[in-house]
Amino acid sequence: MNKPIIYQLFPRMWANYNETRARDGSKEENGCGRFTDINERALKAISDLGVTHVWYTGVIRHATAQYNNPAITKGKAGSPYAITDYYDVDPDLAKNEAKRMQEFEALVQRTHDAGLGVIIDFVPNHVARQYKSACKPAGVEDLGETDNPNWAFSPLNNFYYLPGERFTMDKDLQGYEEYPAKVTGNDCFTSHPRENDWYETVKLNYGVFYQGGREKQFNPIPNTWIKMRDILLFWAGKGIDGVRVDMAEMVPVEFFAWAIAAVRKKHKKFLFIGECYDPAQYDAYLAAGFDYLYDKVGMYDYLRGVTSKGWPAEGITHQWMQHGDERLKHMLYFLENHDEQRIASGFWCGSGRCAEPAMIVAATLNQCPVMIYSGQELGERGMDLEGFSGIDGRTTIFDYWGMKSVQAWANKGKFDGAKLTDAQKELRSFYQRLLTLARDDKAIQKGAMYDITYAQGDGFDKQQHYAYLRHIKGETLLIVVNFHDRAQEIKVRIPNDAFVYLGLDGKAQATATDLLYGGKQTIDFVPDKEIKVSLDAWRGAILKIR
Image (cartoon, rainbow, N blue to C red; front, side, top):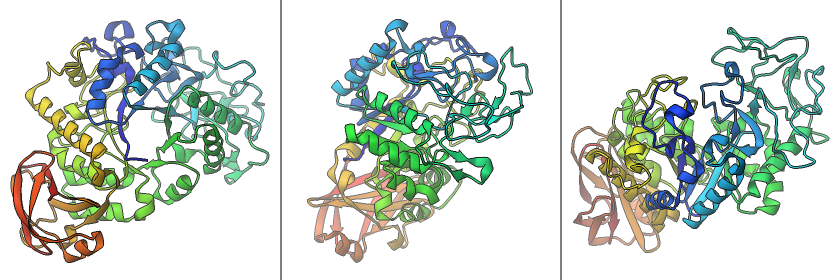
C-alpha cells in the first residue's frame, strides 16, 4: 500500500457554517454540520490538499443531551466515543433524520468518487451507559440483552457488574438509575466514578477476569467477541475502507487477531488503525493484523518537544530507530488529532507556522502514513470556551460549535478560502505542497531513508537542525529543516556511508531544486562536500538532486 495521507474531520463541526458560537449552545442555536454538507466541492478541496483518506469522526450514533440523560452525557452534543447504537448513525448529521443511513452511504460514495478512502471510528472498549440498539438487524441480539447482572464477571456477559451496588456520582443523576452498577469504561471498577473518569460509558467484557488476576477465559469464544465482529462486518459492508480503533490496547489482542481475520475474509484490503500508547505491545497488535498504530508516545511527543520545549532536534533519530525497519512502516505520524492540543494554541507554540519543520519531518521522514486534523492546515487555535470543553487548547468534541478558521475557508460552502487571512492562506498552501509531495513523490512514498544528522560538523546545529536523505532508483531528495526562530545558513555534508548504502553516484556538480518553496542551486554532490542551505525561521527544504 502506498503511504496514506489521512485528513480527520468532525462532520458535526467541520461542515457547520453557523457562526453564533454561543457558550454551551444548543444545536438549534449554534448549528451542526451534516453529511449532505460535505459535497463534491468540499471533497475536491480535501483531495486537492494532497489527502488520500478522510477519517470521519463521530459517525456512529452516540449519547447526546437531547436523547440521553444529561447527567451522564458530556456536553450537549455528547462524546462521539459514548456509542448508544452501533448499528445507527448520528441523527444530528442528517438532513432527513429518517434517511440518515442512506445519507451516510451517499457520503461514502461521494468520497470514493473524489478518489478518497473512508475511515470511521470503531470503539470496541466501551459504550454509553444508556446503550440500546433500535436499528440492529433482525435476529441480532443486543449488547447486554442476555446478561446476568448478578454475576460480577462471566464470559457470557457483555458487561462487568458490581452486584449489590448502585451507580452513584458526586452530582444529581436526574433520575438515572443503574442497579447493579456496571463498571465504567476506563477500567474503573467502582460504583462511584469521579468527574475525570469516563463516567458516561461502561466497559465491554471480552472474557478478561480483571478482578481475578486478569485471567483470560476465551474458550469458548466469548459472546462479546461475536457481537463486535458482526458490528465490524456491518460497517465494512457499507463500503468504508477502514476503521480507526479507539483505545485498542484496552481490548485483548486475541480478539483483534480473530476479528480482523474474519473481516478480511470478505474485505481483504480493509484498514485497521490502532490508537495505542504502549510500545511494549506494538508488535503484538501488528501481528494481530493492524496496519498502523499511533506513534504518539514516540514521534509525536518528541516533535512537540523540539518545537516548544527546547528538546534537541538530533533526538528525532532515536524516535525512528527504536522501532526497527519493519515496525517503522506501520507507525502513524501526526501533530494534531481530536485528543491533542492545537499547535497554534497557547498551550503549544501559539502559531501553526512554527510547526512547519516538525510537519515536514512527520510527512517525509519515512514510508509510514501521516495524518492531520481539520483546521491544522489553517492554524486553528482551539482556544474557545465552548461549553463542556473549557479553554484547553483543544477543539471540543462535546459541544455544538463551529471552527472559525474552517468556516472562513469554507465560506458558506464555496470552499474558496476567500475569508482567510494572508497568514492562513500561506499556511494552507504549505500543507498543500507538502502533503501532495508526500502523496505523489516516489522517493517519499516508497524510497529508502538515510539519516545524516549524526555526520554533521561546524555550521550545523544539532539542537536546531535536522537532515536526511530519501532515495529511490532515479530520484534522490535531501531534506533539511530549521527549528530555530531565526534564519540560518546551514552547512550540510553527505557522508560516504550514505552514498554506499543508497547506491548513489556522486557527481562533481548537481542541481538541487527545492520542491517545497522553489528555487535552485548548484551543489557539489560528492561525499563530505559542504552544501549550504539557507532557511528562514521555522522552515525546511526538500531538495531534489539532479
